[in-house]
Image (cartoon, rainbow, N blue to C red; front, top):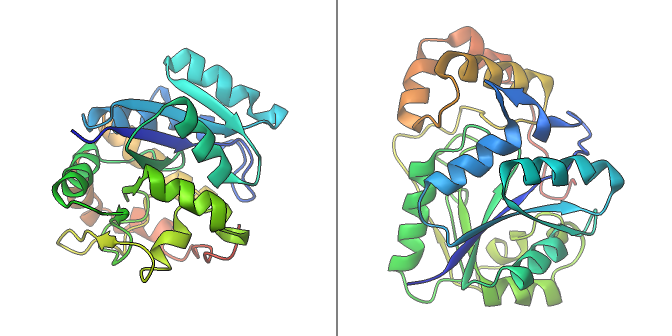
Length: 243
């Protein structure tokens, strides 16, 4: 079976919400929730957190030790290089990329995307964000290991920050597949980038507790919480070119 390693990118630095990856939610750090949800998908042969060599990220390394999860340190701004370094130390056929600002990640979606990747031979990249129907914060993506190494050689500028973006913006060069799930819940914003995002995510974890919540359950609850949904409805997502 295709060996997939999960790599979670995590840094303390954030222009809009510094230190967000170690903020506590229902007794567990944001990073801890992402690591748990990724593992609960049951499809990863290995899991590693990719952080930077910045001294501020010593706190991320300490949290990884507490969580008993592997950690790799690499360049601050060249996240693609960090991922390849993590892959070098944790060899696999493919890499599933996670970001540590998605504490509401759904293990069922992680499992589904891995099943799709394994079912379609020859894919370079598969993602739920190509034609978005999921809320921001619940996406999953997988890139073939050899393709990631190709990107390491040819990607420049913002593509080195966003790791996989060169592949999905050049479908003429790579075999790319988008996964869409219905109903369309893309209007929901469940990632963690601003104080408004934090207020919504914290309310959700206060309600559900220290568990991974299926998207359908979470979305049904939010349907009855218009004031919560409005908290971050006007937050602008950064463009790909913005780091």
